[in-house]
Image (cartoon, rainbow, N blue to C red):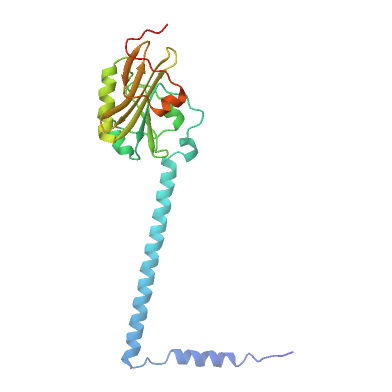
Length: 222
């Protein structure tokens, strides 16, 4: 077992203190070193302050974003009702679609609310899904009401947006229409509303595979 005397500590401390409190060296290099050390510490303090400020700002932005936007799960389609009219636009630019359709005052909503939208002046624009944007709502034209307006409407938006497909279905009356347009040109269109209202372009491969029957103009159906 070892023991040490504590009476030597005060003298050692005083000696150390005396060494620390001795007059500063007159060497200019010592002053330069102190100044450089002070500048370095100042830079560290400023950088640390900016780091913590930036970290707080990022956390605040993430918090605001999480409150402003619904969870992604609520934005996914699930058991949606089939709309009567809808567009499929080959694009990832929602702003361009909104501008082309002349829409304003956008509001975020879920797929469920968007597909059940009401009001003749309202439309739902989906986020891009595999390179396509869907537009749903009663504000889209109905071919049985004015097929000429539908033609000009689709020609116009495809001229602005490129590849556009349009679908319309009235389940009660079995009226239906599908159109494919590209850069202002109608490549394929068929509309049936008790009679053929629109039959343009050649039968597509998809129509043949699905066994679709497209009647010519003026043919009566028993």
